[in-house]
Length: 167
Image (cartoon, rainbow, N blue to C red; front, top):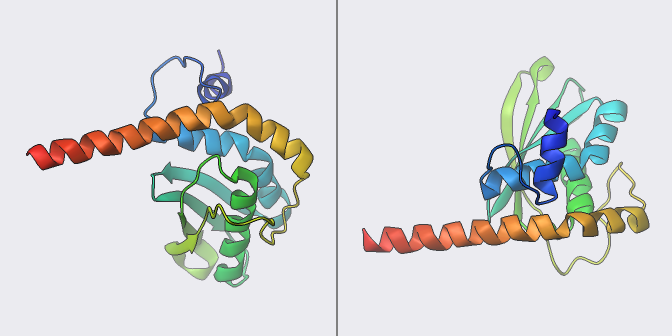
């Protein structure tokens, strides 16, 4: 079995070769589901985007490039592309995007931006254009796995809170 097959099994909620934590499942799900968005940033913008963490509070991603553009609009564009693609699959209120550009001497500059907003009805402006009818159907296919992992993450927080209070 190829590694990518194992990742596909994980995000669909099937048993992987080894067990993953809810955070790891959500990171794998985000990277797999947003593959097209991440690929488009890479092909046309020469920007490497990788989701590296998920918590109940924030999605974390690295944004690496050698472009000489101002980092703030580029990072906002990436956030918008990810938020539009994921919508409510990973409902983190914040995004922590870590920007690196060796040509500009920047390594992991953090940008803390709003991410999921349940009141948002229109897509955020992004250079990555999605065909919502197609993405919505694919998103529905990931929804069960995302909900199970998110619920497990909530349960972890609750268990941690209870054990901290007892200590």
